[in-house]
Amino acid sequence: MNGFSGCKNHPTEHSRDYRNEVSLEREVESLRSEVSEKYQVGGMIGESPAIANVYRMIEKATRGDLMVAIQGESGTGKELVAKAIHYASGRKRGPFVVVNCAAIPKDLMESEFFGHEKGSFTGAYARKIGKFEQADGGTIFLDEIGELDLDLQAKLLRALQEGEITRVGGNDTIDFSARVISATNKDVVQMIREHKFREDLYYRLFQFPVPLPPLRERGQDLLLLSNYFFREFTKSHPEFKGKKLSTEARRAIAAHSWPGNIRELKSAIERAILLSDSQEVGAADLMISDLTTISPWSDRMSLARAAETSFSSPRVERTQPESRSVSTPISRNDFDEEDISLEDGDGGIVSLEDLKQRAVERAYRLCDHNVDRAAVELGIGRATMYRLLRKFDMME
Image (cartoon, rainbow, N blue to C red):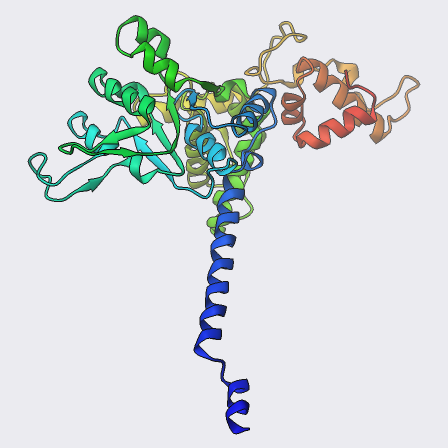
């Protein structure tokens, strides 16, 4: 009896091992779920038509196993798209291996791709497993594919056609099964014309092209991303809690062309939070100017201050208010005198609701029916602007 009693109070080694195994499986599954959620399409930030098309392309890319080629300017988020495709596909349980083709010396690239045997060249003191072997069963992401020289392009083409590789200095062929996703910011078609990229490799890699729009073509996503980066930075740095972007800063963000795209925007927001001496981050704190993208920081700071003045100072002359670019700030002179009058036609006081309607209507018209721009000018959120437009029956 005592023996059975002891079994109840002290679990056997087998039961402990089983519970540990179940606990480990749950932890692994939780981590997989977390990673999948982080890189799923819904986790990408943006609501513009341009990025909505990218979402659709990602979703369609996950239906099969074609090779995907992501094209876009530097800083547009090509690796994030590649991860979204991998973690939403049937290969999500396999590895996601990244190769930056621009960061590896040309004489070492073949070894990086396919591995090498011990003694195959000077410095090869042990066998090395290449990236393609490491990616077996998962996805290999070839970033900056346009940087490969023609000799390695030919070897890559053969590996993709045959589904097998040979390590440098080795004789045995090794089968691999990995989905290939490549990315480049270069015009590959032009490279083919200049005989810098193999046409046959192009047709092999570009089975399913996914073009990424530059940030300047994503409209309302600019402020969505700005707010996201602002929140994330202040969340991890609570000493800046309470800071916010000023109207002038929002105007500057909307006006800038962002040649560095999302990477540049993130850096500008985080830098501005550090530079700002007040609770409101100003346009000068962003230190952005299309004339000074690559220039001495001292010059950039002075031009940024000049830009802040242009965004906050009223203009004397009014020209073509019905058709304005996103970079043109609205001033008080853009509103007719009757638009800001607090009196109605009979000399009475206009209600607050009527004033609100007038402000929304005028901002919407002066911003050429650009909802995001009008919301910035009024100092309200995008969702609030849409609600007011529906309330006052102004939606087109």
